[in-house]
Image (cartoon, rainbow, N blue to C red):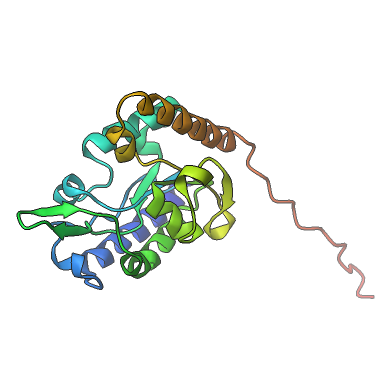
Length: 222
């Protein structure tokens, strides 16, 4: 990727982040501390899409930080991808919350919030043009594959995402961290299978477009 193209993509993503910072389409735009647009390599082969920012992400304005972020970094490192070589974002760019009578708590984004934010996610995919999309968690997978998608039954399979991009879904790192006992090992094995599938797809040769046919010019004017 040329320096000029990388710079162009960086500018487009920065412009998108500024637009999201001004956005108040949803009520959660008024309760957030920071918008969380996304970060990473603008020319990344892999884009990771989660569901939405949590409390720590909201405080720092960055996706996948805290314990879930640390686990995601270990997951990526296991298939030879440093975090800064991946583009990471969420289906919604503000922290979805509910008030439990004492404090704001995290919740999954609702369909209207994901619909309001979809323009921003589509723009990120259009700018980065990843070779593979990895959706983490049921809400992220459903945002691409519809409300009937089952993360427990359909994760680990390949689908066609936006711009004909290969898409695979796996469990969210926060879900892995909530498991206990023997369930932890079982879930980790499934996630490892999904990560290996991502690595294998990224290792496939990049198709080279066929050159345009060369036609003989009419050198003698008929």
